[in-house]
Length: 181
Image (cartoon, rainbow, N blue to C red; front, side, top):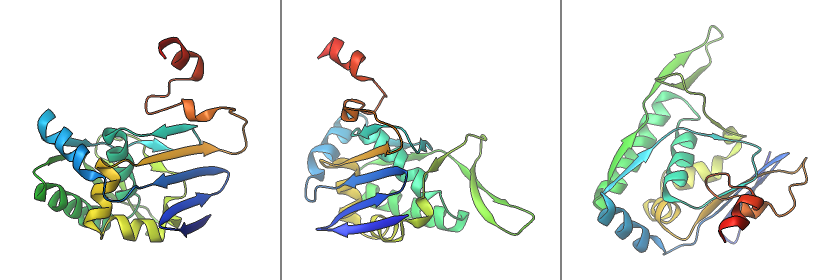
């Protein structure tokens, strides 16, 4: 899978496409929203592969972030969890993380698995070096990703979804979307 950084925008491409757009300097409104709402964010594991979706909500971006954080060893997941927790604590937001545990296969390969056995993944997350390094080392980038005017788009270029940007956050298809808008 290819990862490009062009004008500070991360882009990836394979048969499944994940594009992440992070508008820098836009975190304050989202932070204020969360602190007024209840002051906490749940980081749940998810499945992010070939679906045609645009994830714009703070909750879905948090799920994407936690899934990315856990797409490695338990040591890396713990380190990333600490970074997220410390960064959000600095702005007054509490974090609740879906638990993961270490699993070691007979071959010696180690990974994280959900404590409750839920399946989770981000397609090609093992190839995202630059993005993973940036999001788990730059506090402002992390905050802009979670709380700013940012989004994640997932898509499968093997199918013709047509106007696929109508599917946002909860998987509402265009027909359903048009009923309410």
